Image 1: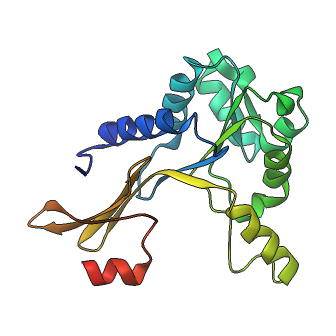
Image 2 (image 1 turned 45 degrees about the vertical axis):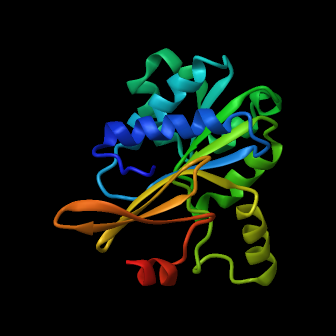
Length: 206
């Protein structure tokens, strides 16, 4: 049975379930996506860090820039030695720890040149929160576009939630993607899909 979370706390619980269900999968690169406004992503990242740290001593958290790292290290002093930029983690000895788990926060298309090398060299399980790997305005050349497309294909979504016009879309691995229709401020399950439905499919079913 598919049920939408009624608040962020329940959404985070669902995310944690999806992560635990996916840790032993063959997929080494996993994506988590919260597609709505007002999210405090550091709250999500540290909830996830603590969940994983209970199962693995080698859990690390990475951000694109030093400012974000400094802020995270200030707020979470107890794990400050576990927090890196993409570039500094790539240059650290932890990059070769095959039994480790890496959490990457909000990588953007302009981070690709520092994010991709970290991903390619990292040997453990990698979870990315709200990544945006592709941008139509970046990388005009065919080679660059193909390189990014091939990179995107190496990632598997394990959690997704997004409000839509008159509905919502949700994915909690290992279950299917679930589409909901909104009516009178209530959400009703409409249909599930093996993979993420495109905009036309969503429109037809709503």
